[in-house]
Length: 476
Image 1 (cartoon, rainbow, N blue to C red):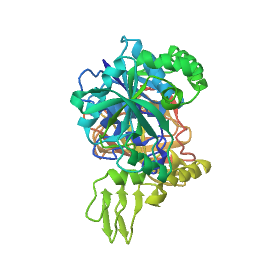
Image 2 (cartoon, rainbow, N blue to C red; image 1 turned 135 degrees about the vertical axis):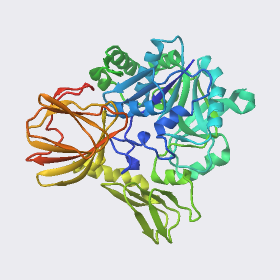
Image 3 (cartoon, rainbow, N blue to C red; image 1 turned 135 degrees about the horizontal axis):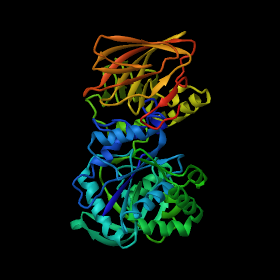
Image 4 (cartoon, one colour; image 1 turned 30 degrees about the vertical axis):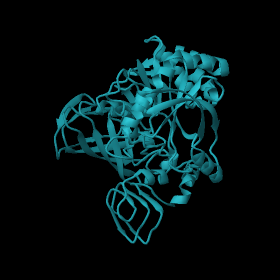
């Protein structure tokens, strides 16, 4: 059986301002209606012998990840929560341990959740081509046949041919070497040579084979991973790795920790229309372009604009006389960059973090396990929010020391608890929650509940919450 291991951690700062620390690129619908995470899972459909995935994500993203899986009717075999990011090798190690706890010698298909693949048949053919080698104990990686001289990817040099499967559609080669991201001249030579592939960061191997090699080449890492896995605690449908042990684990990638050192590494070349969507220019390259060579998302009007990526998320975006630029509009931030400099977007994020600005990690729309809220306006002693509560969801029973709240229902039905009374509100009805009052908001209906919340008081921070009861295990 193949168990997909979906690596859904990471922050994706190079796609700021759409991707942010608490709402990263793998959870965004950057191409089509599904998020990159959802696409990663759905492209495995109809691939024979594939079981339920093990999903590894950050604690802060757990409810968003679970909701996105629910929307594509997928149930994870396990959702492992990392207390801190430690790169791909420790994540794969604890996933292998989890898989071995229920299945004997499973094949693990390691898939980053933030990649784009447009040719699903070619992708699946490549997976099938690597299965025999993986079952024999080889560590299979998948190399992308390069379409151009790319300096943003690492490369794999393929060596001796060791077999051909799947009717000759894909072949399997010994890995001769891994090469760091090259300069332009070297990348051009690689493409001309024909034996070099882009390193995709996708792998297929038996769980026990990977752990054996990790034990040999990174014994300290596997010791801490075993301790972290042994200290798992359950939280609703999530499994929290032991914080202290996992935090002490060395951080390293699968490539550096194992693949560059093992003699079991093999590579399957494939051409699945792959991109790691590592920058705005990469997203322009894979996007559908209009006659002016622009990729346009949202409400956008252009005049004399060419070769640009234009994304309007919240309002009308217009451009005049723009060429080879990226313009990204969100409710609280706008990015304008030349395509040749989009790799420097992360430097802007660094400035935001240094200045302790919330735009580095939060959108104006903030997701919670019960739904979301969006800031509409903020001024001295008051702010207005739009709140959406999912069907059958309920917020915590809570109170505030410094603010009162006025709720107006604009869609759906709200179930309100206010001290000792419980009542329903319908559309165009409202209620007032005085400062210091115990209260709770729920949606008993089958459609999303939408309401406007007006807060007033001396302090309006999100940390002014005292929780008495919560369905999602959050402390107050």
